[in-house]
Image 1 (cartoon, rainbow, N blue to C red):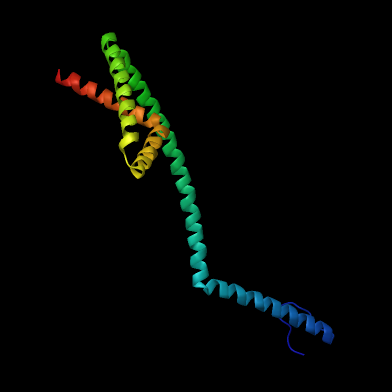
Image 2: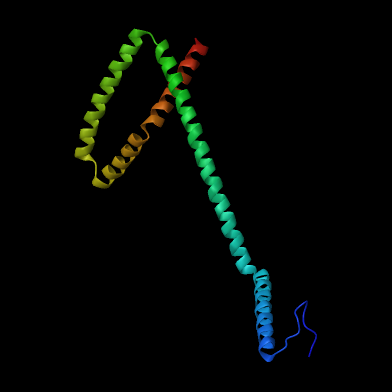
Length: 160
């Protein structure tokens, strides 16, 4: 008989020899598959791409959370600044601002009614979508308006 591989005992029967040959074939098959997997550039590239994609998705999630936190902080800061600006306004000016806001709302309602009567349907649909978007983001718009008022007041103080 031939020299047995490694430390395997010499087969004493034909059946044992066949079993050893089957084990050796299985091991050889696994080795070939492992080598083939290492040389399969396309599959390895796809695996790497999937890994990078997962990492990018995780990073995007983190950044989204950070942006939401920063937006919340900014919103709070803007609200605080708006309250400070409003507290500094004299009562007569606040009353005039409230009256002007009421008049603006009345005029806007009037213009809205006219718009409904005169505008073509596709234009009205797009406008309605824009208005819905503005309503959905009302806090951000109010915060931006508050910042604009604070900046305007600060600029006025510097000039005066």
